Length: 342
Image 1 (tube, one colour):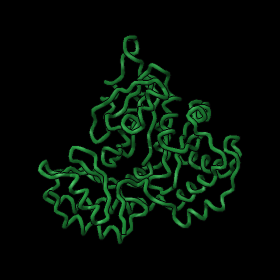
Image 2: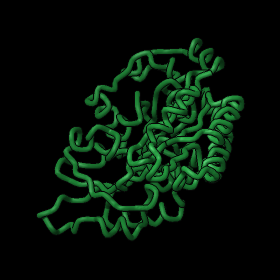
Image 3: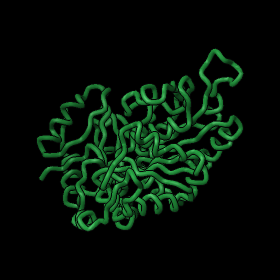
Image 4: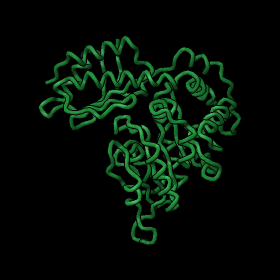
């Protein structure tokens, strides 16, 4: 039995999802004639209380489109040093939008309103790039699946209002944050100008993300998606997977969170583990002691058909997901209790 815990992107569609995809009504989405895509966009826009939504082939493209909508070349955005838009989107901020990043040294991928305000370049100092956007990621990927405090997000909203900045939420795992904290999607819609939400991570879809926002900011979204090569045709087959996931795969995220918490419990008892980022959702990031070879641990787990991710500098990542069954979980817990890395 192969157990892949490298990411929640490794899942395959369930039988119910495949059936929904098989029978999906489709049309040409470039002409906005795919009724299943239109239904998915309308439903997610309503969830967040936004006027518009647009389906994208990936979360990276959705984030890059949002940055393009909020900025002009030569300007700057603010994000945490762990931010996905800075670390894992191929330099797209510079390539696609001609924008620089001002990085904040936050805590587990999160920062305060005071830190955000301090990072804003003086608007009348023309020697530095003009700050035009603040982006946050919830949950934080490199921060171990941590969830932002909504009060802090609202405080940053006030900073954006004061300095006339855009505010974007990279919500690749926002569904996890919503389930873990009990917050309502509408709450995030009220705080942010734009939000990208992923369907292919915790919700188990084969592909797809959705960008939501109000009329003014989203007016050119479809044009930007076209420029980025994201125009799609009979894509209702994929949108149907998203609709199915919204009905069947959101609440069950709590199961992934519980399994991750149990993995944290086992790891915390092992002497080779130096520290663990406190687990809130489905990501477990831990660091081994300096005298332990992280690659040796990865190799030993692979010999037991368990795959996890190395992050460098002795850090490793485990991500629970839809395809990680109770049977697989028992095997992983048992193996982690007995493995002896060198």
